[in-house]
Image (cartoon, rainbow, N blue to C red; front, side, top):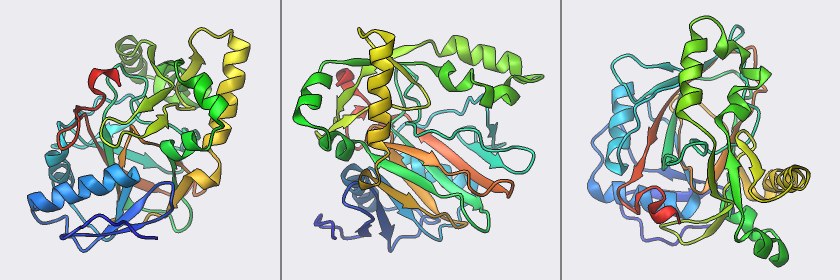
Length: 297
């Protein structure tokens, strides 16, 4: 399997036909030439998520790598620490005292009116075994539906709610002590939002299922029983391995994904071992569509 784009500064090796590619022949600790930035963006648009190996960046270098791709999101998290001195960086840490608690496929920021374009996650410490991340290609999942189902979903909207995940028992620790006030502020800042169930990617033009088991509550206009039955089918459909790739982390590994085109799932098969990751988010797609979803396409 190959990617036939005429790359000059990087190599691109697809992981599956549905989603994912590994980028090589580049050192992200150095300033990235403009041509390489454009080629990485091209690979991201083609594959939904791109992976890098053996990139031992400092937190500042990690954030600097992200900046040419768009406006960075300042981290304002309820569940994660923020790296001191790099306000855009979230610290995702799990160990025996902090078990992982998001065992759903999800798209980052889908519960916001203006979800972020992309996320870049870097492995700092990895467990001896396990801890992979699975990615779903939203276009591949959509293309796997019957023509009748595609037609039925074409004008449907979904309701997404921050509290579906963050109000669940799994997140009780987030509401303890000082966290309660932080969570209440987050709840007020993130009321339920509505997005099309099928979205057209503003750069690739591909149609994609735009759902998240962590946050998608209902389908607008359907009785709750029908809505949740259909969503259950769509969640299971997206989880078919034919629409996925799986990435095994090592220290210095990086995953850079387009939230408009993918969902992901951090597999918690390593707990109670320690897993430490750093993440930054990019709000706008400056090399592509500008705003992540221009004209709410």
